[in-house]
Length: 105
Image (cartoon, rainbow, N blue to C red; front, side):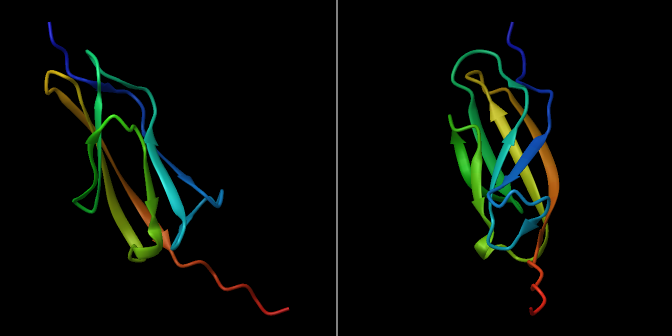
């Protein structure tokens, strides 16, 4: 019996600056928790705003350099598929902000 891949967790975003917000120029690691798939060799794909930024591969995370991103809301999609072609996905909206200017000293 073939079963569809299962993603019981959420998309997780880690900024290289350890900020709670994502700022323009940050490198953000996008991954998921608790991804389990039937069979061997799960394949992972990431899209940002409808564009494939990492096509299906064995790499279960993606490093997004936001230096070229537009400031504002972005739609992130993650898909996983198994050797039988079954797929599962997660989506999230994230915001990229302009880093505030520090006041003069």
